Length: 203
Image (cartoon, rainbow, N blue to C red; front, side, top):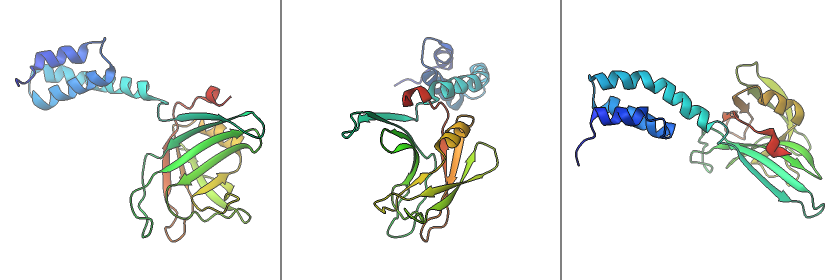
């Protein structure tokens, strides 16, 4: 199969009818395979703008919005959730890289909740004794929030208090970091891309 020419790749990279992600791939392929050509110089100048276009196209797509009807009230529960962009690997028996999840929930009976959960392990946060977690919104100073564990005493989830304050600060940041104590695994920090959160989908 003949290699695509630098000229054709540059045409593809400049083609505004194509998705920005496809244009980036063409420009990157040009830079990789046609070094030292005039087309490579143009592609290098195009790439920052194209990558910014891709970033803007993808803002908010990491959020998952779900809803269901509460059987007891026939009212709607809505939830927005996002996975951490980083992973941590705990010791046995919780081995294997794992993400954390940050969820915002509006429930007709239980009210509004900020829910932090991990896949495997033991968060040190009792349903009665509670705990503190550290939260950093963007580049602001870390803030301490009180939290509680679930009533069923499961250890992978905790509820962070102060929903309104948390969401207000989150909406002014693109990244939220949450640090919570775990049993024998220290207090790892989990990072979430919260850009593009759509509060209208929580109504």
